[in-house]
Image 1 (cartoon, rainbow, N blue to C red):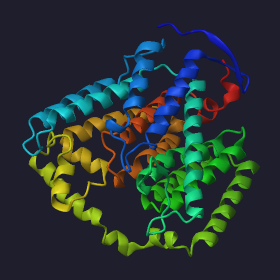
Image 2 (cartoon, helix red, strand yellow; image 1 turned 120 degrees about the horizontal axis):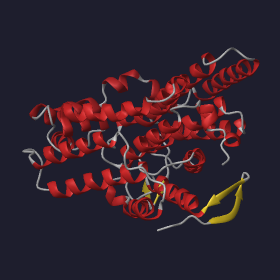
Image 3 (cartoon, rainbow, N blue to C red; image 1 turned 45 degrees about the vertical axis):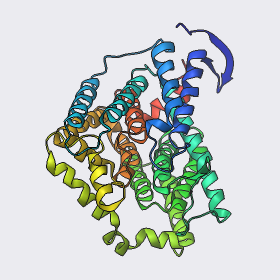
Length: 403
């Protein structure tokens, strides 16, 4: 299907093609659906069917600019083959193997649909701006709930969609990449920097009000990495000094304002970590890995063991990966993750910050083989492709990328 017509829509002096407009609509729908759905936790394919189908239609039938020869697809192929193999021959899983295999195929095809598209720099900027806008809107909704006292027994706020309260850990995991992008734009791209600062602050407060220790620690770590890259990337300038002093003063102000709150004390309470039920759950889930350490015990085996022993999900996407796909699966995903860092040397630290914001929160939620797993991988790889030859500050500067 050929859709190359131009439409007379002017946004920031850019003329947007119908195809690009459809691309942005698809991404807006996918990103929103990944968090705004009828599940309080991870976004499995059952809750994403409309968004997945729209992605398939756009990528496979409408989009004219595609490249199906991505080098990392070989890793994806073997990830899929080994996962299907370990699931089919698993001795620990209940009789739902073919449904599990169907979900694996759906998500792998979804990943290909996103990554086979040839993105322009403007496309990449627009997609991340869409993510940021959605993150800001949802953060405001969460903050409004906190202000109105719509919190759980621990004082943690979140959003309510379709009558369901989104788990704060999953909500904060969604918001974290939005904060990282906003903070990166504030530091490195000298266009509308204060808009991105305001957006970053809103998202940061939204994450804080969820009470998610993993989410908050992830954004703080990614911010520290970006600040270090900003200060030491080139020579010292007056702008750097002003921004560093401003950030320092802002952090001190936030600390003085929030340090006595229950949420802040909860995040720093070391005894709650040592008594965390997650440690028990992880120990039970690892039994699935011990049964088949090389190829894993099949998709869902770790969660099956955890639920049987504790009635809880694993709450760790990487232990899920280890249990389900074993050492081979972990190594294959490490190869896939490594492709995210095949960028210009000056961009490596920035990619590390994005990687941290996307995947550090997944150490405390069960997102493996859901949209919360595959969408961040796709976004990081799409970004990495644009950072291979140019500095990130140039790639994300709209004024330097008008076609």
